[in-house]
Image 1 (cartoon, one colour):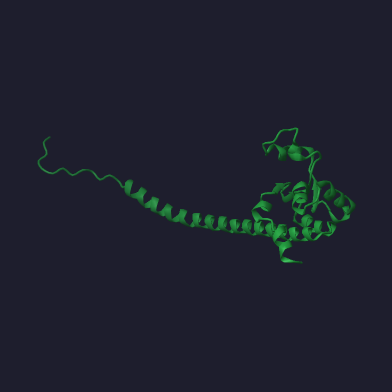
Image 2 (cartoon, helix red, strand yellow; image 1 turned 135 degrees about the vertical axis):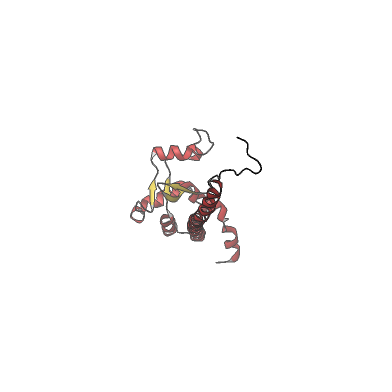
Length: 175
């Protein structure tokens, strides 16, 4: 494959990441966004998937329910008539479903774009893992330092709560 084709097909990671949504607790991409990246019509992508339904089990691809679609759509400032360019509820593809798409969309572009999308999913997973690790380290530090601060506060409290000693008067006492 020549270099100029590769340069044309390169899609920025940020663009791909911006098209990944959390639906049903999974990171997914919608059919219309994938079709745009692959350079095919959404109708053609859906048709290829329906012809190869056995390649797309529920954990690879699912269609959004009307409620999910309305919820997803409400997150964007678009008119109801426009539906963000959607007439039908979209298909949502998990990382595995995206990988499977290149096998049903027989084009070099689909293969190259798929590689970039999979790499973006991997980067997101690594980022989440790093954040989880960082969160755990911070919690450990909080527990560790909370104990030290508790000891400091205990000492301060003990100094403030020292029994008041009776005042000793200096000088002459008159009754």
